[in-house]
Structures are given as structure tokens and as C-alpha cells.
Image (cartoon, rainbow, N blue to C red; front, side, top):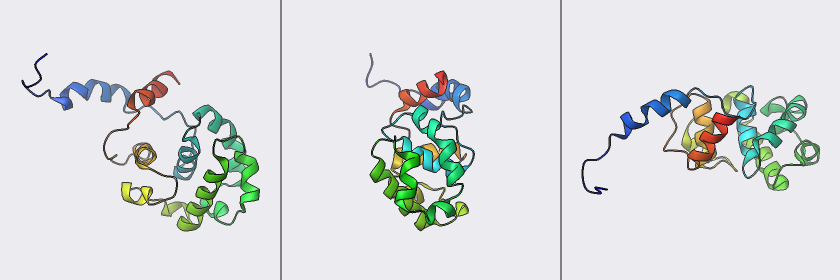
Length: 152
């Protein structure tokens, strides 16, 4: 193995993989940017299957960030009770909803997303990618993400 030889052309080497998988939908069954953001936040350290299973009832009761912004934590918790770290995530969701207040105010930049409680760079990259915005960097768990995208 020549460590100091020619640098590989990563763009051309990755092109076939990107072509094959770039249009694969994320395994979270979201319908809009609001749902995507909520589901990505809830899915941290949890399974996409668990989040998908509770999403329908959650979004029937909180169909927009506006409805979530006026919700009490005690009203939200029953819909996300099976989510890991439910108390923390409920607090984050309610704080985000109050901060943003309208669906159209959901940021579509790395800086805007990571300024929100509970949204780190990894979650922000997922949201940006799914919203057809340029992601910043590479998803850290790329192998896990690709496996989920391919087999689900």
C-alpha cells in the first residue's frame, strides 16, 4: 500500500455510490419539513421504526409547529412516552416550537438548525439532505445510514 503516492480522486470514486443512493428516501416516514425535524430529533438514540410507529398519532394531535408551540409538556408526553430520553426530548421540542413558532421558520442552514436545542450536526445534516439542501460534511454514521437506506 503506497501511503504517499497519488491521492485518490474521491469525487469520481464515490460518484457511483452517490448516484445509486442519493435519491433514496430516509427511513423516517415524514410528510413535511416540520415532521422531519421532529422525527429526526426523536430518533436520536432510538429506532426509526419506533418513531414511525408513534408519528401518526403525534402529528394528528400536533399537526404543526404552531400547535406544538402552545402545547404543555403534560399534553405532549403521552404521544412520545416510548421514546428514549423522553423528558429531555419533550423539553427540546417545546423550546424549538416556541423559538420557531411557524413551520415556514424552520431553518435550512447548518447554523440555524444547530442553534436549536437537541439538533446537532449529524441531525442537521439529515434534515438538510432530506430537504434537498447542501449538507455540510459527511454523516458520521454513514455506514449505518446507508444500511438503513438500502435495507428499509
